[in-house]
Length: 378
Image (cartoon, rainbow, N blue to C red; front, side, top):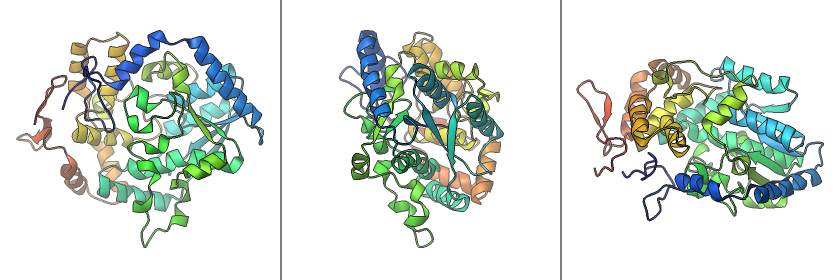
């Protein structure tokens, strides 16, 4: 495992590739922002806005996929107040056993601000079965739910004939998942090639028990369907010089966003502005840490290092303390939901831990063999 020479990004992130100087794509992108001609970029977004308004066949200029969280709240206000467009918000609703009251309140907050929103709710029984299957096949319950989350928006855009979709960050530029890199920094039409989505492959979801016609919301439109619908997915974050976890969180909290107040060691989150609408992504970040050696806190720290708010040494201490942590109560509630014991949960997780990076201590807990920020050869 090697670390970026500038931040604390490890090369274990799926899809990432450091440059010849050992610097990650996100650091290079952040550095490139100093040279951006923002007036030229504004002309680019004006052309995209014109495309949306010229293709207004339903009364809406565009669609924004929302959870009610920090990113989607800021995007919605920007599109309405700055770009002067009329967006239709689309939210994929979690089942009652998963969604938090905070998540419900945050969507209600957006509606209270005057936005129109459609909520899509996949069948909860199938949702639970596919989540369980994803956990046991990939030790990643989000493998199924993110297919539904990311597919539902372009599916509805095609159905409603609204070809312009605004999305948030370009993970190729801002995190380093180069699989989604499109024709430009704003082009999101290759989003389905992100690591979790695997090109939109749903074959593993289908079984004797669950047929394709029962999981239509999990089916990402084909390239041909997107071309026929003239679909255009655009990353709004590409047009902002201050897109970040904290900037988006502050903007949205000032407009009614309800954030988390649990201790950072319970949620693996030092700011409390992520995963607001449910609790189990917190647990999945812990599993990601055990697979790849980094979690959500690494992303926070790296952004602050790039902005000059933290030194690399200060970031190391924060990551050591909080990355990959998760309260036992979330593990228990998830296990109860998919119908397994906590012991069965850990049996599955243990199978997927990267043994080159972690080893068990005398108490049976996984501990890193590596030191944050230092290249490590297993």
